[in-house]
Length: 202
Image (spheres, helix red, strand yellow):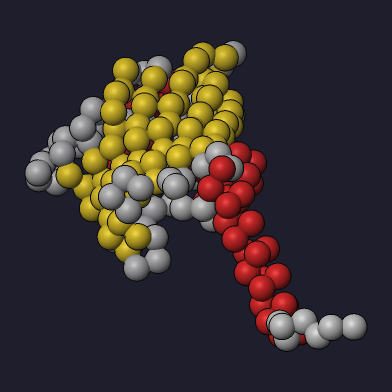
């Protein structure tokens, strides 16, 4: 029986390297894109809810963002922007792309100089005495081979996060006594959604 020119330790390391390269190779060919969706019935009108959706400062009231976030551009509508540069979350920009009151908002999020991106849409439609919100997102995690594995779980994980945020929006639209916010002016006053004087445009 001839001795192998490779030691046992070398074989183990070689096998481990082969497995690692195989996993990285699979990660490269896995799709880095994902889709998420959530819906909820708001206990108010679309007019009352819309100020929280077409304004970055309104988004801050019901969705989580880095503490370093700053606002620029118009206060609301197309071009309204929120950006951040955070040690934990990296750098990013959230921009309202289109806002058609009170039914439709589209936005884009770019992280780390656009290497990762998300495009989202919120649609509002009357349903009974309330408003049905349908929130959809599509994202691209970029070409990092590890991101292909992350994308496999993003559909469900991000859908859950969207649903949690919509739950917070519902609570936001209900006053402290439990009554429904009846109109957009009351909704704006309750959470200080900005008007054009809240900050200086860039």
